[in-house]
Image (tube, rainbow, N blue to C red; front, side, top):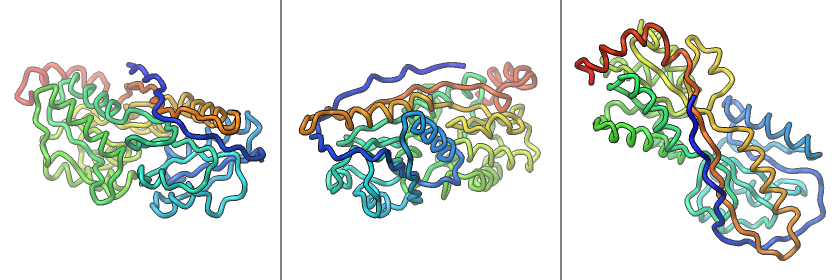
Length: 316
């Protein structure tokens, strides 16, 4: 396992504190509970809230822009102490026009120059770490599955950028044909995109997936195509969902520090809730740590035996 050092919290600007009576209820806006990552993160948030004597109202936004704005503005919500919002499409302009004055913590995808406290992971560094892992094993024909140009995603863009950076550092070109679009971060889309990629690039020897769900679908497609993992093609994901450990083979992934992510969210929410009325609080952007978890989808005896040939052979 390898670790990346988390960045220090960074004060960006100040926002005035407006105090309302405490209700013991917070809201959590989440894109889609069918996505394992969000379901597991929500479960952890609810447990940590319960430990703090807080109840959680869960609002599923489906990543819809209008719905995300409405929740940020408090539309349709009962009186709450604060909002933890996991956005997919919110913009800086949306946030600066926010009509609800209550405490807000953004969680997940980073919004550039966000005027509100934000807890996130370094998506660029996560994909770079995954790609570097494959490169260190001698993989040279590496694809990226998870671009979302039809419905732009900050996380997808940054993870793709990290993949490109790692290739550039290894003096390898980023082949547009080796980058696959997905309609959603799901196993179904990962399976479809991987099958198409294998038909177009038969010499593929590594795949960096934008998240673990896509990677699980990639494993299915590789098995159906008769490609051994990792002997023929190594696969990495990002997020470390629980299912990653139980895939066949178990999935190598880049894991965010979920405990740090959730604890930071509640720390920042409580900081806003306990500040004196009228106080100007600095907005903080906190980036939590990540680590590479090596499992059988990239590491095996067969792969170790084949690695010297890859490192010295024509695939370099």
